[in-house]
Length: 110
Image (cartoon, rainbow, N blue to C red; front, side, top):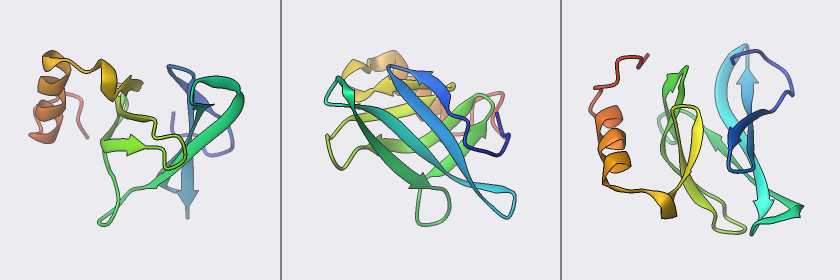
């Protein structure tokens, strides 16, 4: 999963990501998805990890915090356990999992 390059990884829900590197370290993610559900149009977001950005809570399985919102089409979701979770589909069980990640209770957290 951490191989450098331009290879995209499918994370479900018509979402693909690739890692962004600087000096051989992962600094962010580029996420691509269909614009407003139209598979003929591509939309995307770029996020950066660090003090003023997102947190890479776990690399394998991939967990990123907080959620990602597309500035163009307002698509909104989380990357948890290496999969995309739309905010609209969240339920109390998922909210509990997210809280556990934040509180450091995930056994695979790095």
